[in-house]
Amino acid sequence: MGESALEYYRKNAISTGHGVDAEWDKHIARRRKLYRQLGIPTLAFKGSNVLEIGPGDGHNALPLLTEWHAAHIDLLEPNETARRELQEKFRRENAPSGSYTVYPVALEEYQTSKKYDIVIAEGFLQYEENWRECLSMIVKLTHEDSVVIVTCTDEISYYVEKMKRAVMQYMVRDVEGHEKKIRILAEIMKPQLSMLKGMSRAVEDWIEDQFFYPMGFELMTLGKAIDYYGNQFDVLGASQNIFVDYSWYKDFEYDYIASYRRQYDEKKHMFLVAGDDREAVRTAEENRRLEEAVTYANIAARKIEEEQGNISELAEAVIAVTESTVNPIIIEFNSELIEIIEKLEKKEVVDWTKYETYMKCFGKAIQYLSFMKK
Image 1 (cartoon, one colour):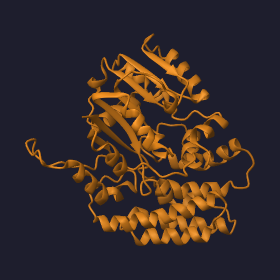
Image 2 (cartoon, helix red, strand yellow):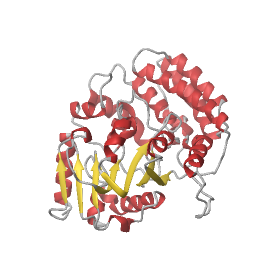
Image 3 (tube, rainbow, N blue to C red):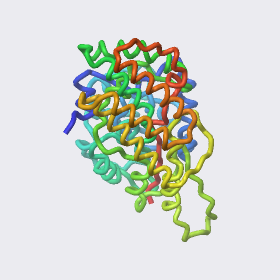
Image 4 (cartoon, rainbow, N blue to C red):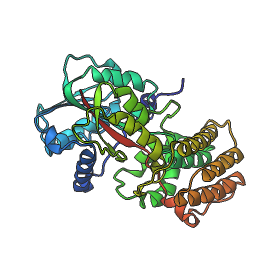
C-alpha cells in the first residue's frame, strides 16, 4: 500500500487549497457559479448545518458563514498545518463566534449522532483508496433531503496533468529535497499557470497537489459515484454539467440515472481539455477506446514516477492516445509532449516557450457532483 494523501501532507507540513485573499470577490463569484451548476442556490446555506470534510485552510468554507450565513459548520481537518491555518483565517476574517467547530480528525474517526443539511467533501475523496467506505459514512451523517457535494475524477480528465506530472517528476528525479523540487518546478510552471483562467491558488500549492499527491488507487469517477449513490440519492447537478434531462415531470417511469450514466459514457471525452465547452457526443465504444489508451499512457507515466519505466514507453503510449481522439488541442499537445520527452531523454535543455499548446493546455481534472438524499 502506498503513502496516503494525509500521510504525505503531514510529513511535508503541507496545507493545500490556499486561495488568494486579494481576489476574494472572484472567489465568491466562482463558488456561486459552482453551486448554481450543482443545482444549489446559495440561499440553501442560510440557517443550515454544514459538515465539511477536509477543508484545508478553510478558503471554501468561510463564505458559507460570512456570505451565505450558514447556521453552523463542523470542519473535519486531521492535518495539523491546515487546521492551524484554517483557525487563523477564520479569526482574521471575523467568522461569527460560535458558528463553527474544528475537529482534529479524519472522517473515519468522527463520532457523532448529528445529521447535517449539507455535507461537502471536495478535492480529495476521489483519490482515496476507501472512497466507497467514505461515501457510506457520509450517508449516516445525512437526513431526508440532505445535500451531499463530492468531487470526482477519471483517467481521461487527468490525462494532461498526469503527462505533465511525469515530465516534471522526471526533470527533478536527481534533485535532493522536496522543497527544492517544488521551487524548481514552480519557476517552470508559473508561466503556464498564468494562462489558466480562473487560477486562484499559489503555484506551489498547485504543484504539491498535481505533481506529488499520492495517486495510486482506483479513482472515484462521476459514473462510479452515481452508481454508488443511485438508489439512495437523487443527482442534483454537476460541474462540468454534461447531463441533460428531457423528461417531463410526470414521466415517472423515466430512469434518469440510467440516462446520466449513458451520457457520461458518451461525453467523458469532453473532460480532456479545460476551456473546451463545445457540446460533443461520441459513442460509448469510441470513448472506451480513448479511455483504454489514456489509461495505458497514465500507467506508463506512473512507471516514470516510480523509476520503473522509460521515456520511450511513455512516448508510444502518447501516440496511441493521439490515434484515439479527434480533439485538435490534444493532438497538438501530444505532438509537443513527445518532442519534450525526446529532449529529456537526451538530457537536452527544454525551451518551454517553443511549446505553446503544451504550456496552455490543462485538463478538467476534477468534476463536482451534488446529490439530495431521497
